[in-house]
Length: 349
Image 1 (tube, rainbow, N blue to C red):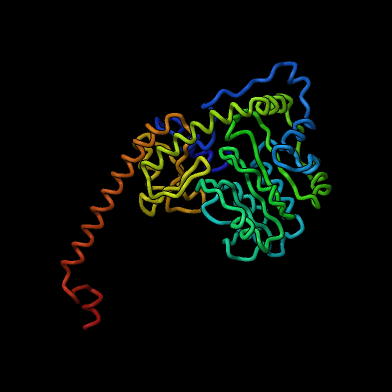
Image 2: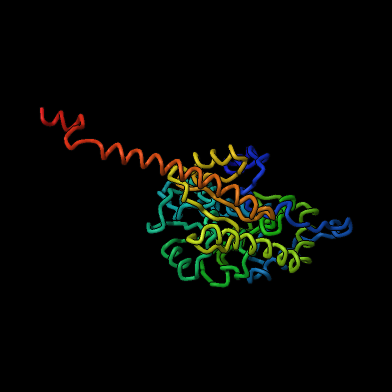
C-alpha cells in the first residue's frame, strides 16, 4: 500500500482507457545511462545542474527520492517547532492528496485559502486542476503564512520558469523526474529551501535521508543531457491532447498542466468514476483531492483522443439519466396539489 490515489490507479490498471496516469511513464523513451556513467555518477554535479535550471545556488537544493518525499520533508521540518500549538496549513481544494495528508499527519490543522496560517501549500500547475497561477495570485496565497511549499512537478509541461525566480523569502519548492520525463524508475527528486533555512535543513536532511542510488543519479544526468528533445516530444503530445480536450469541452478553463478537474457529471464524483470503470475507463474520483464533486482526467497518454471519446460517451449517458430523473421529480412535484403533503395536512389538524 502506498496512498489511496496510487492504490486506486494500480487496482484498475487493466482498464482499456487510462485517463488516470498523470505522468508520461511508458509514453516516451527514457535514456539509459552506461555502466561507466553509473560508476562515475555525481550527486554534487547533479545538484549544480538542477539548481541552474531552477535559478538558485546549489547549496539551497537538496536531492530526494521524489517530489512527494521532498514535500514531506519540508512539511515535517516546518512543523517541528509548532507541534501542539495549533499550527495551521492553508490549502485550496482540490489539491494533490499527499501534500495536505502529510500536513494533517504532521499536526497542522487544514484551513482554506482565506484563513491565517503558518504554512501554505500548493502545486503549480495544480494537480488536479491543471491551472498555473499568475505571480500575483501565488504571492497573495502565500501572504501572511510563515512558509509556502510549492510542488512544481508539472512545471516543465510548460515553459514557465520556477517560482523561485519570484524571490519570496519563505518559499520552498519541490520537483522530480517522474512526470514530464516519465522516469518512474529514476528515484530522483529535489527540494529547494529558503536561504535562511539552508544550514538547519542540511542537518535534518542528513539525518533522515539516504544517498540516491548511482543508477538514479546517472539516469537523471542522462535525462538532462537529452532534455531539449524529450521536452519537445512531451509538449507535442500534451498540446495535441489539450486541443482535443478543448474541442470536447469548450467551456472548460485553460490548462497548463496535464490534468483537468471535471465536475460536469454531477455531484458524486466517486459514483461517476465507478460508472466509468464499468466502461473500462479509468479516472480518479475528486474525493481523493478533497473535492467529492468531480473527477480528475489526465492528458498524458498518446491514446488520449480515443480514450476521451469513450469517456465522453459515459459522461453523456450519466447526464441523460440525471436529466430524466430530474424531469420525473419535477413532473411529480407539479402534479401535487398545494397543501396535499403530509406535513401540510398535519399542520391543518
